[in-house]
Image 1 (cartoon, rainbow, N blue to C red):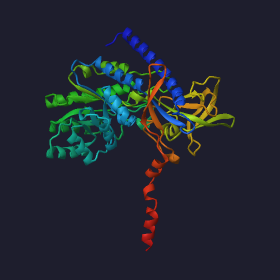
Image 2 (cartoon, rainbow, N blue to C red; image 1 turned 90 degrees about the horizontal axis):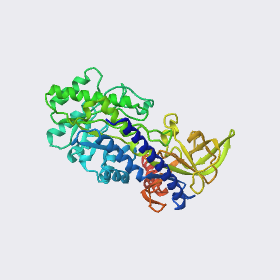
Image 3 (cartoon, rainbow, N blue to C red; image 1 turned 90 degrees about the vertical axis):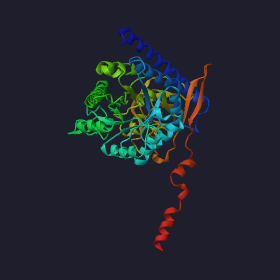
Length: 466
């Protein structure tokens, strides 16, 4: 365990990294304008801080390496749903981070990024037989969500051998957090085997007794709005179950605990809190046996790895007022910030104000709305935000949007997906950019909307009339 001085040192290092991240972000917004990535013809972009992503990956690895017994196998698998971009997955792979996938599409992204099967974990509440067959053939780890899925795996294991590590996902039912829709360990959560339901715990024990090839146990309690203490309770419940199963079987059949991810992110300021080091230390205190080397570990963090390192920047197309309140009409709204627009109380965003040249805007703080381009009145990035007055030609930056905001494009009004660019300082005071994903073209929108089948319905109607 770290001393008080160590913890103070951790906090100081984190504060330094946070300040450097803000400076890089400001430099990147200015450079995006100067280099034409942000322009009247391309008024919306996503920016990803490559340096910051690398630092987060290093911090995650260091937090657990500081506590686990030497030689303990540890896999940190990034939750692909948070930022499903192949270049991001490749960057994380370089930093020793694997992939947690929850669909055939996410698995395809992970494979395109070069993730090896042993660095990949498949979790999903609705795996098809084909998905399971593919995962077992590749040797990808699979966590069965329910008894019916385990039956399917039984059939596949009878007909073929597999090197896939296999386990069961349990729901410790320790409770939810402040955001009900994303809480995964409530009494009625759709995920995993509900451990406190009548007969469920005994069923899980028997499942392991009957299947020597079940060697993992998975529980995921964390998510935004969940306190660290509740996350630790979920891990403790899974650890206690693993100990019980191994004791009743009479050997160490369960060799790996997958403790999920879900470390919450501070969206209220630029400070990184909580940190991976704080969470790992809490786990060491709450579940002392977790790090003693008897169990390998898997984590599945997503939001906490990427959120602070992404920024959505939109040009202010018009500045107006309504009811005496200024309104900045921008090109970023529900299509990139779906959760924020529909549930602003749960997913508020901070907005950074930049002038027409991409420089941080100065001036007195003014209460104003920052609106998006979609055709409904609730399309607001922020309502009643206090920041320097945004004017036509300025830029509004939605901060801390590196996770989920690049994942959940919502095609309302057929608004195009923005281009996304990674950036790093060039060592000479400037910024280098690399394309992560090109902006969606109008032709691509038409193609995705059935453009190749424009006459299909009229032809069908005509044939029926005959």
